[in-house]
Length: 267
Image (cartoon, rainbow, N blue to C red; front, side, top):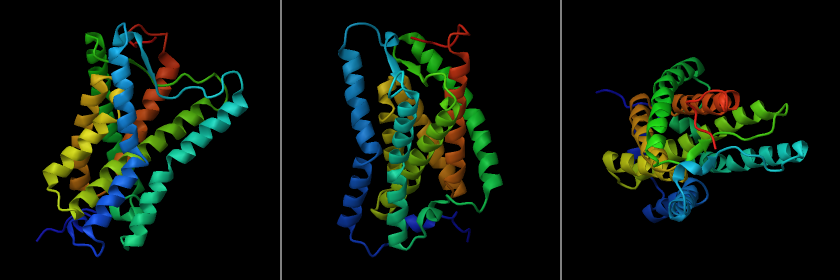
C-alpha cells in the first residue's frame, strides 16, 4: 500500500475536536485573513466596473508608498504592514500545534528539504510566471482587467528589500492558509477532495478580483495547479518558494522595466 505524502493523510483522520468547533475556527481564520481580502476585492471590483471609464485606465497597485516624501516613516509602515500580515500564519501554526499535528510541519513547511523545495518551486515559478504574464497582457488588451502596478515605491535604498519581503509574506500567507490549512480543515470536516480543491481555487481567485477578470481567472487556475501539486508532493514548501519567486520577479521586473518597454502596461 502506497503511503500518502506527509501532511495529506492526516487531513482526513477523525479529530477529537467537534465538527462545529473546526468549522467555526476555519471561518474565523479566513475572516482574519484571505476571506476578508476576498470580500474587499469584490467590493473594489464592483466599484471599478460601476465607475465611468475603462478598467484599463484604473490601476491596481500592489506595493505603494504609505508616507510619500517621508522615506523613514514609509519604511516603518511597510515593515508594520508586512509583519502584521503574517499574523494569520502564526495563528495557523499555533492551532496546528495545539491540535498535536506538529505546527507548520504538518503541511510540509520546514527546513528538512530546502534544496528540493527550492528546486521544485523554481520550476513551477518558471512555468506559471511566464504563462501568467502572457495571460495578463492578453486579458488587459481586451479591457477586462485593470492595469496592475506591482510597485510604486520611491527610489530609496530599502525599495528592493521591502519588495522581496512583501513577496515572501504574500507567499507564506496564501499558501499556508489557502492550501495547507484550508485543505486540512475541509478534509476533517468531510469535504470531498474535489470540493476542497474548488473552494481553495475559487477563494484564491476571488481575493485577486480587485485586479479584474484576469486576476480572478488566472489565480483560480493557479489555485487548481497548486492544490494538485500539494497533494502530489505533500509539502507546501515548494509552493511558497514558487509563489515568492513569481512575486519577486514581478515586483522587481516592474520596478526595472516600467516606462522603458512598450509592451508593459502602465498608468
